[in-house]
Image (cartoon, rainbow over all chains, first blue to last red):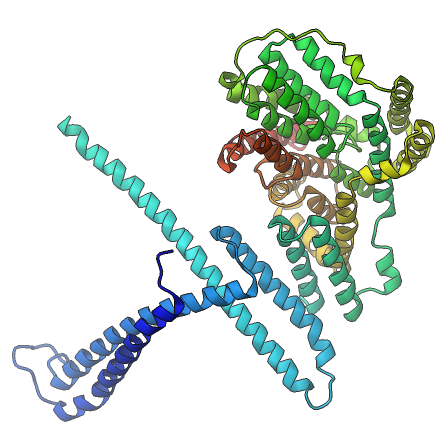
Length: 185
Length: 423
């Protein structure tokens, strides 16, 4: 797939996630605190209220910077989550590579998890002392598996859709190029 | 919707999906689903154990097993092989005639044999023909699969889904033929015409067929004669069974016992040859559908279906035909028949013959739209693979979906006029 190993990705992306998150946090903090010190100062040349207030401008600039760093951190987090989900889903037994079949298999695993949880809970629940804890644990594990599988399904369907749109765009571009070439012939 | 209904829907979806994705064999998927249905049904108090035991429909199983035994004996007598060999001989090596014979024989043979047995037999003949003609076997084998799927649409014993519908609707053998035979024969012609135009160029030129006697393929004349007589008796009894107050399963099982007694074949070999995968799938899936029925879900669905169709027989019939047809192109048509049959039973107020006929057509015609639609297509693709003539998913789907759409389109018109649904 041309992708680095899970370990390699973690080594490369985790420091970036930390740096970007911390920077985003700093700018967010600045956006909260700094405007107080410059509030009321009118910025010359900007005549529109309240945008000519230095406090507002500082808040807007710091928030924007925080958002930029947050987006950068999220981009790396998504890649890590993607690989994590891939590894987890494969560990669960879904090894299909054809996208739509894989999404359907994810759905079957969701159904199996639901049935398993529904079958086990009535036996576990009445157990003295640990019944409640085990029921909660089963529910949480099931919920976790659902989320991972649903995320995997969404990811696969998004990729399929993206590929289809890309091939449609290529086809349209080809048509446009052909139409462009014709008058020169 | 209560918890039990949700669980039964989950079981139903799980069974269909795991079978369609070939995660487990279809019989195992159905048996697993049946086990879960009984498990949850008992724990939620939807039904009792005594009720659960009655979920397997003995009538359908009797009809299926009886018919399988009768035709297995006939198959071993060489009756169907003889038909195929005669077809090749009569064609005189003309590829167009051979193509038409392959198509017609496929459809005719599958009226009596199970689809998988019919395809095995025809595919063997078709690959022999194509080798002799120095041609690609794909046009013959793909066409055979599509025609085998179509054949037997109008008879109660033509397919397992027909047996399910026949037993649930109470339609007799003759009613089946009266309602559906004209449609089926026109569909044969239409489908053959479409297949011929699609494969015209691939059929090649005429070649001389060496002289041979088709009767040489019959090893035991006595068994052949007995089987032929028994088939006549079998079909004759099916035609008059309602007048004799005999149920279809009684006819099938009676003739099966007769076939086993007269053929002198080893019964254990006959039993081994039965399609147990289908028998277990049918049994398991019947239990799953009964579980859904027990929650009242199918009654609600049939009411919703009537509301959607505005209580109009025309819309109800057309919707049922296309929904069951498209569903059968994705999942087993036996499952579709088992699901829709109880829904139609819940419909009162107008003549349901059109609905039953729509279900028969839909479940039969949807079975060869894509390589995933049914076991016949899978077998055809595997046969071609063995012969080194692979047909891609897209290539088959192009032919299969076109013929399916034409068949469903014509069936819509047929049902409207046959049952006077307009005006």
